[in-house]
Image (tube, rainbow, N blue to C red; front, side):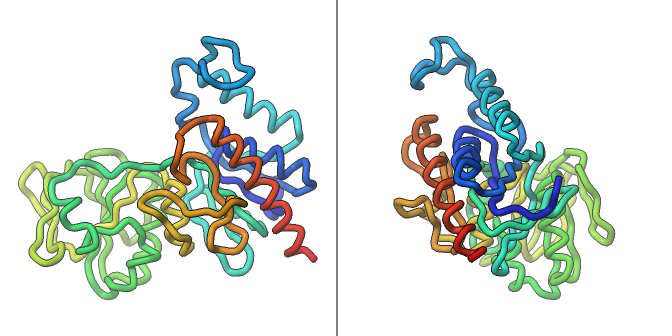
Length: 289
């Protein structure tokens, strides 16, 4: 598989596959990056989508979509995206590969939910952050912690390592998917985030604690909202703001499906995917002259 494409679509659910099919038919060189952890694959039965026999499982419909990508010769990497950067072109990183593209379509659904840890919600914006790129600057020369055990947490920690004096990764009792040199790992279960005006420490269930000026939440896999926030795209709550062409306020960045809010339905995701894929293809052509 090559490393440069016209369009990279992040997500392999209904919105992502629809975007890929329309982008491909429009002549765009397209890559889909996504795994099997999508809402559709977990649905027991799909009884309200056009053309699908009653009793079809979400996993069956998901597999049909993945097969369509292969049948149309569309490249796909089964995995997760850990970073997206924009410097005129887009750079998309997975744990094992780096790709570039003229345009990106975010189609990863609604993304992660914050864990239920005492003090986490209370200190949001006062030491608890969900974006190292956005807020890491404020913690230069300080001690910070990243909450999470996966590749995404490791990527956030790597970014913070260049700014902070000390970085911990707190796995909340889980085994880390990846370790990073120069970063401390603590696998204890978290009990509480503590502080006064801002975060000052994190306490574990065994009664021990570490002092930290900030806690960056990076649990599980990064969602579309995480990437949009880091790229500077406008959000309305956790939903990405798009226009009628499924375009964000960032040139070449499109979004489709559950991550744009509204009806969380396959029909909406497929429609928005078709629009986003078509418009992303137009954008990529314009950038190539």
